[in-house]
Image (cartoon, rainbow, N blue to C red; front, side):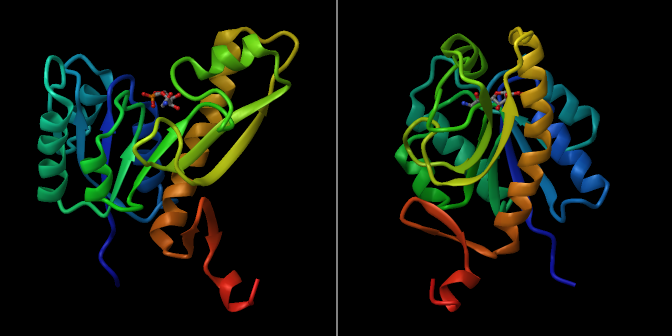
Length: 209
Ligand code: GAR
């Protein structure tokens, strides 16, 4: 049997997407293993949760540090853990070009909107205030621009008349937890490739499409 692909998880906060990935692996829905969890913040609840679950959990503080230096340390830890795929799970930092180049098409992110709508902070609030009727979440490859790289998959969530920020964010988060493991499975399966900005199934080339 082929060795399990190794994930490196980067987080800055709560870590519910990390835990959803860990649960998907534990239940056999996702064939992979978490080789390392890195937080740039000492107070991230996700870091504590990773420690409690016995993962290789490391703090690489970013506060007051030059981005490139901090990124170099994170890259070194990820390489040391021999990760195949880097998953940003609420990692609230823009990656330096060096970081992106270190893992070409091997860094993914989840964002709580249907990109390219509402990138950046508070995506759910932006959607609510704009008045869209449908929002959702996006899993995408990471490039050096914020919430920008090729889209792997998206899930939609209707905005209901009675929604407030809390209820909308909750329903989006439910979809995030499903979407992220699905997208990671797809990328690790090696069945998709990036053509320009589009993530497409490899077989469609053989079909001449
Ligand atoms: C998630 O909603 C994720 O989509 C968002 O941060 C939250 C982290 O929650 N990420 C972004 O906005 C990236 N631009 P979590 O720590 O519970 O996974």
